[in-house]
Image (cartoon, rainbow, N blue to C red):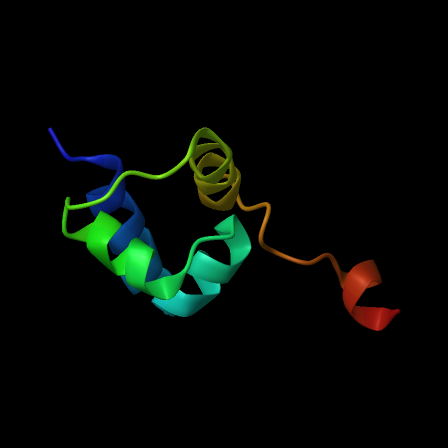
Length: 68
C-alpha cells in the first residue's frame, strides 16, 4: 500500500505540477514538505486536510476566477 506522500508525488508528476506549488497550497514550507515526501516529517492536521483538497482538485481555478 502506498503512503499519502507517495500518492501526492505521483499526482504531481502525472499532472506536471511542481512540489513548491503543492507546498504553497497546503501552507507547508518547502523543506518540511521535502522531508514529508521522504517520510521524515509529518504534516499538521490542517496541512493534511489541504492535501486531500488538493487531490480533489480544489487547487484548480475556474474560468470565472481566471477571467476576474
